[in-house]
Amino acid sequence: MGDITTLAISLERWGLGAYEIDELRLTCQAPLLTASNKSVQVKAFLQGALINSPDNMMRDDLRNQSMLPMTEPYSSMTNFSHYGNGGGETMSNTMLVDNGNTSIVDWALLELRDENDPSTIVETQSVLLQKDGQVVNINGDNSIEFNVSGSSYYIALRHRNHLGVMTANPITLDGTTLVDFTNSNTLTYGTNAQVEVNGVNALWAGNTTADNTLIYSGNNNDVNTTFFDVLLATANPTQLPNFIESGYRLGDMDLNGQCVFQGNNNDPNTLFFNILTHPTTSGVNYIIEEQLP
Image 1 (tube, helix red, strand yellow):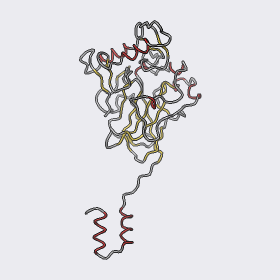
Image 2 (cartoon, helix red, strand yellow):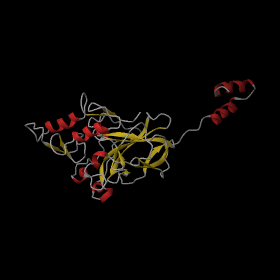
Image 3 (tube, helix red, strand yellow):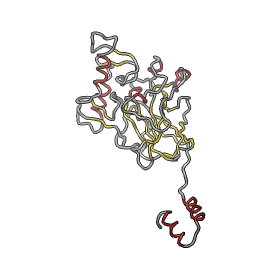
Image 4 (cartoon, one colour):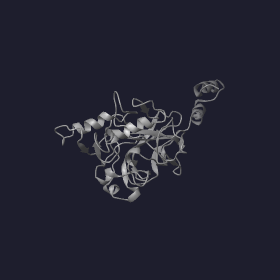
């Protein structure tokens, strides 16, 4: 059968009046999808915050040192974009109190991607990660709501200096499904999308350029971010490479609130060992790529 216009012309020849034809058009029109609140629960670990953790929970050093920004950082970052109603999320001071294993670690970016084309981002929301890996909204709710018209989406979680991760398949947003990226049984998009840390999965740390690669040596490497965070620090006028710069910095790969380029517990070591221990590594020049379309 042809389109509605062709059908209408045929019916007119049969003597059907204009009113009846218009009624037919309305009846045959595809139904409009209405947006409504749908929700999903997500859990994930950041590798950097698991380093030197005594209890397999993420460290909350940034919160503990009052370094977390009240408003999400992704709107001002070049390689991140908000879609739909996302952007500008701001938490209250009550979210920064010490709540044990539910204390806040850092901001993350949650994305809904089209179920037929996972390279298309439909909606975003800046969220918060707790020590136990639970993703919560700015009010502390673990059921993350989106006002969208569809029912199933790929779920992607990204972080400002870690590589992002995404579900291997679309997920139905019914509020009951937990997308647990920490669980090795959760299927993720691509290959080696996360790193295994003490029996749990975590987002790869070291993406200080906030792009889609981990590079230790060569052009656009991630080590340089830490280097210049330290060298150009206001409190380091003599540009000592072993100076320790404190703050909410991309070069702080282990999320302890300090950029350390040289010496004990330096940040480039995190990246170095990620490169050398990656399942498909070919040496220090190997590049780990983010597994997102």
